[in-house]
Image (cartoon, rainbow, N blue to C red):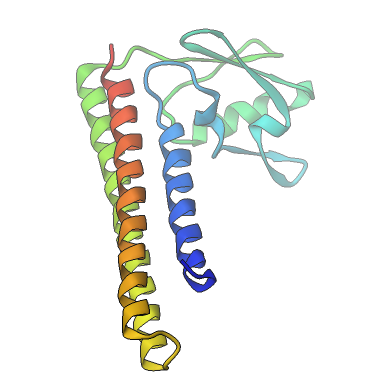
Length: 184
């Protein structure tokens, strides 16, 4: 595969990375610090991720503990968590914030599994769009005389192989997350 098509492979890789990141923020009944990744706190006028202003630990399987380095930020962190959509109410003892993850109900597990499936499908659609863009690029190169017909067919086949490979990876990621969610 030539360098011009390497761009499309990189885009597919970023799509899978993005999917993994999104899946890591979905809670599966166990405490996972990744659920806090998208939450930012107003830290002296700057939107700052929680992990940059506090230590986040998992003392027990279903408890996340957030200990700010600046005790004055406890209220700000608590407020940011309350405003987020993670669905857990923080409890604060003045210096430490605890998030207690409740057991997921069967209904909630199914809802989360559907959400995981949607994210997986969105990633596959993105991969197909990248494949379409690559194929359009190949056709333009062929018309411009940059590629021969044989080179063009080989490049289209290479892009299809990449699409299949990354689609399979997306499928494996969503299946693994679904299994994690549905495990009681």
